[in-house]
Image: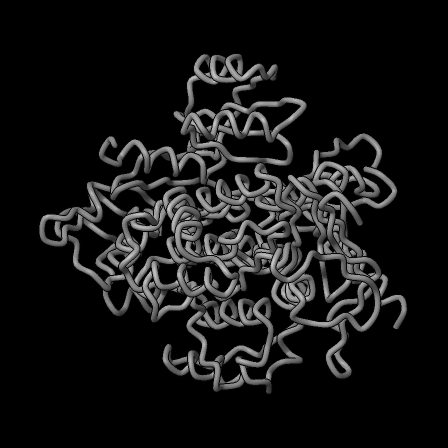
Length: 277
Length: 290
């Protein structure tokens, strides 16, 4: 892969007898945000760590730049609680071979943008959740990496800080980085240029948000009572229902969102597995 | 009962000179799912604590089931905190039994996917199932009122859908439900929304009502990075959605002027904000001008 497009192809990652990732392919182009979506245990962190070189693939290809050109923010905020903001920057900077004038300038710029310029002497452990998330992001960005890997950078972060973190991530992409981030939030995934939905270590859906939504087979109708409970879910007081061969005669279909489309894909996956058993 | 199940009437709480909750009034009726939204520090938790009888109001009234939120009223309430309130070192079934005994009743058998987990330690089961168990535990004593704090954050859409099936079924049976959240997917499941900012109730109604008062300018151009760089260096609060640049609460004429100067031709559209963008705009309005 060239021109800043990184990613994985036909990737398998196995721990003992546990297959954490199975046949996963994902392209991470430059100048855009790519989202990896899934619930607890879907395989998001394994994919992020494999891209970051923390895990070796059991099979398949990983295309990533040299370790020094990778920025990685782990799910656990990615900073040292017992160090001050300034000490965190100096410590991480040194590990990338940054020091003196160059480190000072980069830290000034990043911390300023993140609104952390005035808290350099505060212990990272004393920062609010939102500030800590922003510090973790700054540390991952310190050496201007080509590939930025962010594992749930906004989980548990308050909404106002979430908007700010997303702005910082957008800036990194605008500056030319290839950005991949893991998230459990569908509204965030909808704002990425492309996304990969993982379930039990496998690809459930992938593509641009628009293409993924358009790929829904059949139709979704909104009713007041569920007729096919297994294929129904609630949206407010209404029931939504998936009809694989199109809406019943005379019934209007609704325009689904990403949440609906992922629900249907999970339901189909469930059916397939029952069928196999 | 005929009146509201939960009611805040000019509810106010001060901590010293700080007003955490400022003259907030709302009600939750039987069968209704009401979403209480707000950024951190907006006052949601303080409102909740007064409604649950854990904190005295400085002024106004917190009303649970037609009276003060005392022990007997609280016995008819189910609460699922964000932390879920389960015991990781106990099995799923032991958690159900322990909670049932606290309410002086018998534990209700675990059903569906939870039944397979009855003998497993809670710390060993996945987050989606833990959330289902927390719901089961909160519903065992058949409460009239349910209070849920970000009930489905962190779970995948199908698991979230199945949890909301449970919540909506409770509402269909006349339970009144208050949900505190700041996530769009949860807000969209509610019948009615309330938005708090800096201790005050600033909007109520549908999602459209909640975000009214803030607009977003969307900018579509052949090179989003050029648009982003130009607006960012003009210190505008820019963000990205796909390949579209978004600016919250900005003057479109100013944006056009900046883009003109940078030699970028673009299409501008005025669109509705997300709930988060609305909260950000409110936080900015409230902050001292700098």
